[in-house]
Structure formats: C-alpha cells, structure tokens
Amino acid sequence: MVKKVSIWLTLEPLIYSKEPKHLAEISKKLKKPHASVRRHLAVFENLGLVEKERKGRQTFYKLRETPLLTDYLTVVEKERLIEKCKKDFILKDIVEYFHKTCHNDVLIFGSAVESVGKANDVDVLIVGKFKREKLKSLEDKLNLKFHVINVRSLDEVGETLKKEIMNKHLIVQGSERLIKWLIS
Image (cartoon, rainbow, N blue to C red; front, side, top):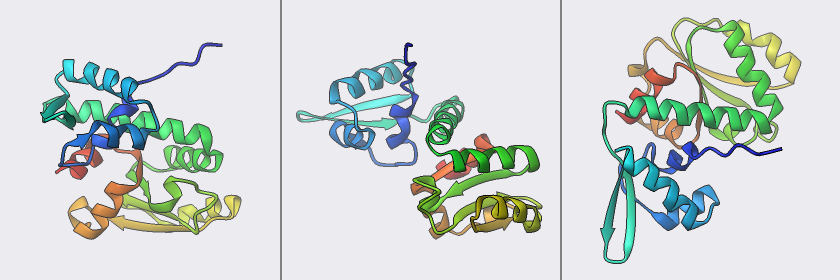
C-alpha cells in the first residue's frame, strides 16, 4: 500500500509566527530532514505563499500576506486535525460529536491537543450560543471533563488566552473565521 504524503503540514511552524523561522528550527519542529523541508518550502515559495530570506549562510522563512492565505491555512488546519484524529480515537469522538451536535465555531486548545487521554480536561472555545449541558452525555461516555469557554464574539477573548490558543489548538469548526482571528 502506498502511503500518501502531504506537504501542507510543512507550513505549520510558520502559521502563527510573526518572526521568520530558520530552516533548522522548522525541520526540528516537524521532525523531518532539512532537505525535505527545504524542498517542500520551495513549492510554497513558488506558489507565492512563503518568503525566503538569506542572512549570511542562514535561510529564514515566513508566510507572505496574500489574499489566499486564509484558504491555504484552512487546508493546513484541517489536515492537522485529521492527522491528530487518526492517532487519538478519543479526540476523534470529540470532533465527531461537535460536528453532529453543534453549529458554532469550535476549537480545542491546551494539553488535550497533544493527547486527550493524558490531559486533565479538554479546553474548548465555543463562539456563539451554546448550552453547556449538551456536553454532559459526552463527558459521561468518555469519562472526561470539559472546560468550556463560551463567548458571543471572538472580541471577548483576551490577549493572554489568545496567545495560549495560538500555541496549541485544533480548529474543529469555523476554520476561516478562527484563522482570520488568530492571524489578526
């Protein structure tokens, strides 16, 4: 069986960073060889999505502001969510639950992004009207606690929480709106 390899996740270390990243830093975060990462970044450079800067012998990369940036980042976020769900079946159950029962913008953040099973609780940001009681059946089924932050608008989220979310998150629903908020 041939394994399908996607290069979209190569952009992940650059997404919410204002500063250019060194090739070695990107490779380390992705746990991939420099040569592979450089080749993937060259594809995105040709698409006009990534800028390359040379400082002496070092090469730095950053995302370019383009009209299609949100569209590309949506692909990256969705691919990351799918990859995490393939490895963490509890996370997959949570994501499927929100897809079935909730029409709000939803993201999971904090330690549950790495491993739901090892997290003390699951931090969830939900934008719009939401009844907390809806999660009771899922909490009972999975034997988990949810820490829900429910806001009417993303403007209500403070800068400290926004930075925490930027560091570790998975967008479940409302990718375009949430990405625009995160990169603003």
